[in-house]
Length: 260
Image 1: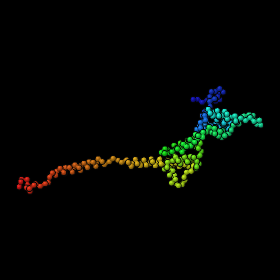
Image 2: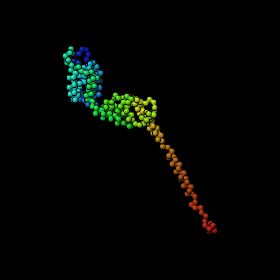
Image 3: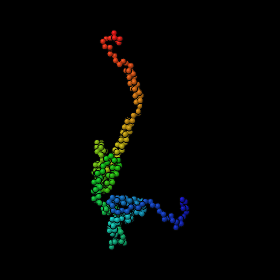
Image 4: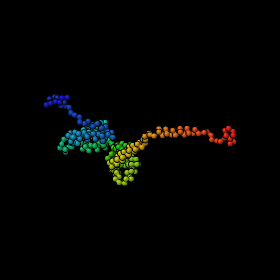
């Protein structure tokens, strides 16, 4: 396709074409488990188009424009609280929106559901590793922690650490306790330790399977020659036995065959 050269005419069709660097956030309808997704999409969009989102008064209206359903209705009644029309204010009436962190806090406080958080907190302690991959165990645990609002509780006595210790097989916890040193404390330390242990166990399992397969495999040899030799020996013994007289008993009465 030829590229345009020189100065484009003012009515060129391609002058209005702009690349779509990133899709805008999907609408937020107030679901408890969708709050973090929506906030994350907005922050990412702000980073990509940072030149257009320098002020909180630019970010808050943009995010609010993607409200739908219950969130849109909430914002209709919440937004008048930020209308500034004081008589002592030298600046004309306007909206004085909260800062972005304050806006996120308002949104989270309005649409988070404590009952759902309690349910998912209980589910955190029901996640078991069993024979599943370690990464799958931590993924399920992190998912429940996020829905329970505990995904940042990663300290030594945090909820995530307690859920890990309950969900691990006894063989893992016993081995960690028997080591006696460098025992993991935080969530990150526990995760790193368990992943290393799981990888080592997988390597040992594959190695043992290889050894067992090699030991059980034996070449098939020596059977035919042994059978032939045995048959020959058996045949010789039969021939010798048939050549011998059937009876060695002497004639009765002490006489020979002619009766003498």
